[in-house]
Each structure stands twice: as C-alpha cells, then as structure tokens.
Amino acid sequence: MPGGVTALLGGNGAGKTTTIAMLLGALLPTSGSVHMLGHDMARDRFRALQRMNFSSPYVDLPKKLTVRENLRIYGRLYGVPALEKRIAQLAEELDLGEFIDRGLGKLSAGQQTRASLAKSLVNAPELLLLDEPTASLDPDTADRIRAYLQDYCKRTGMTILLASHNMKEVERLCDNVLMMKRGRIVDRGNPAELVARYGRKDMEEVFLDVARGTSAAAPAPHHPDPESPEGEAA
Image 1 (cartoon, helix red, strand yellow):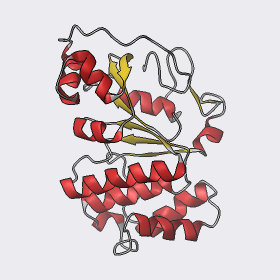
Image 2 (cartoon, helix red, strand yellow):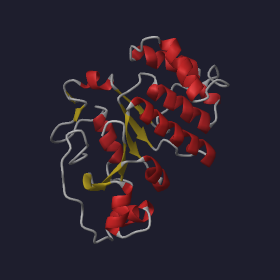
Image 3 (cartoon, helix red, strand yellow):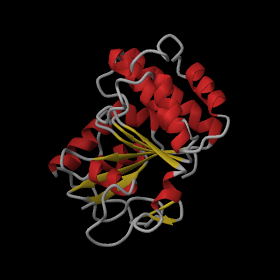
C-alpha cells in the first residue's frame, strides 16, 4: 500500500531477514521469482534498487568516515541530484547537526541509528526496508524515530516494510502485518484485526501464539498481493 507501513513478523528463524535479503536482490530464491516495483530482481535489480533503500542497526556504515562523508558517498552511488541540499535537509530533520562531521565510530548507538536512517533516505526512496530500526535505543530516541518515520511517510508517500520484534512499535506504526513461520506467510491483517481474530489483548500475545503454534484462530482469507513477499522465503 503506497504510503503505508507493513510489518514482517515472526520468531527467530521464521525467514524475515532472508526475505528482506531476497527483496534487496542479495539472495536468490530457491524457487519462484521476486519482483520489486515492477522489476525482476534476478534480471533487473539495479533499476529497482535505485528506487529503494535499507537500514538496519546490524549492518554498519564505514565507521572511519564522518556522517557527512557517508551520506555523500551513498548519495553519489544513487545519483542524487542537489546532493548537498538533500544532506542538509536530512541533517535538519534528523537532528544530525552536532555530529555530522564526526567519525561514525565515535557516535552513540542512537546517533549511529539516526545516521543510518539518513543514509537510507538519501535517495528519497519509494520503498524503505527496515530491520529492527529501533533496536538497542533508549525509549526517547526510539519514540522520536517512530514519529519521524510516520511523518515522513505521510509527507512523501514512501512505503515501509518493517521487520521488528517490538510489538508496541508494530501497533503504533503499521497499517498491515504479515505473520511468518518457517519461511511462509501464515496470516495477515492490520494489528486490530489480528488482535480480534486471535482473541488476544495485544500484538505481543498474537505474536507468541503464532510463534509457538498455540492458537486455533482461523487465518485470514488469502489474497495474493504481487508487491508483497508471499510464499517461501528460502
């Protein structure tokens, strides 16, 4: 859904990271094909990647470079027009000013996360893939990043696919949820629909039911979406 936020949820080993890697073209599926933004990722991944980006606290940017240097390098790789203006805009929106000319390796976890998010937005992507975007952050910084992402999507129409274990984050940010288990999408819906369907009080309880296989809830009717990561993830 353009301008929406979709969560990709599942326990460890469910296939979330593998799915994101395939959506980025970093891994090839063992069967079937992956199409992103109208492009076959096995044949035409670079056109799709020009319109996408990715951020994860588990994937480091070059730590010997400053934040500004990182943004310049990635901006040039994406061919961003008026790059210095775009960097200044992101620096203001994400409050990078006090550390933008410091080496990334000297920054706190929260500052590095903001720098990584700026890198992921430097090309103004149509689709942003996020893997645990607020992991290891203090509650204040995490809340500010969630608020920024919500506002950015509303302003630009960008779509986000979010892998997270933070169910409060999912309830706040996400319009749609894809539940994964053993490499497959086993259920889907918005957070309120899933909570009602499983007869639980919140998404954390729904997540535990699906991960442990303890729920008798009937899955939602299956309606394949060509833009969603359906089917096997490995």
